[in-house]
Image (cartoon, rainbow, N blue to C red):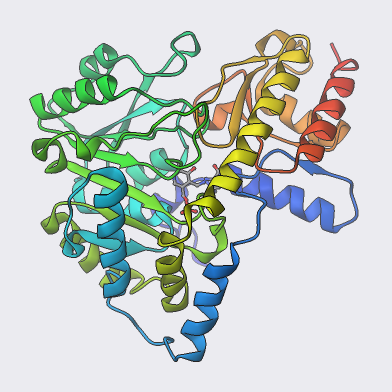
Length: 396
Ligand code: PMP
Ligand code: GLU
């Protein structure tokens, strides 16, 4: 093989640590190890039956050919109607692009908007994929830290101070992976005003919008005004809400010229998302609300369980997530000279307690562990009991 043959862009690229840890936990289990995983960013529920039935029907009806790259007209229509009905966003079907998961929608948006040298503001703790994708698009991530004492709602003043003449866009992700933080309508209004003042694009990743707790009502930034909508790309998908991580269906809604640019990119890179999964996504968007509600309600019970158990461990603390299915546990007080950071602690817990967690460093939150509660109550109880017990023997 020729030396130095790989492009710089892949030399700098890291594999997704969340996918890697999840895969490692699954592999250890398959090898017979009794590993419990609090690492996975995916619901443990089966995809609801009506969605699977729609996929079977699509196959038997012969919906097995290419679709337009931007998606089946019926799905783009269904997304447009969903956004009007549930989010107060008015985007015609031509402004909707169906993608291979929401991850691909973020990537398409960045590739359509970011030129080399452009800066993109990301709030920490962040879903690490944003950083790698910004760099892949040639841009620079600029990190603005959100603080636990503010419930991880970022400071709008800090946001504005981070803006430079090179700033092209800001990424919002509420409810947030990994903190579960959500923001108020007022916060979004202030952020939108800053974006307008500095002429920024807003990428709003709303993938956890339906997994919210304590009656929190999510607000879509694009619904605030026509001006805000004209600079916003709303990103969402089926993975989390409908337990469809493996189906790979996401979407974005944007001003039509942006949607057209993303569609052209898809023409040349992936073509359409799987036709059968798109038909299933139409059924997902029309799913009776009580099916999603039963999963959400179960997540809320698990959140309360997990938060209680985390706060019970001496030296661990956490904020109360308002959405998503993660608790970001502060473990700084637990660290010792021998196990002196979150990465070592996560590795040690996997070896000694056989519990997989994700070190907060990968989300820009050193000194924390992300604990997913997208697993059964029994698994949460067992995993937290193991962690608690193992920590009694943490080497110094
Ligand atoms: N955005 C956030 C914040 C996520 O946490 C994830 C994945 N866990 C995604 C996007 C991507 O989801 P998908 O599986 O639809 O690509
Ligand atoms: N995003 C999910 C997580 O944070 C799934 C993993 C990934 O897509 O990287 O765990």
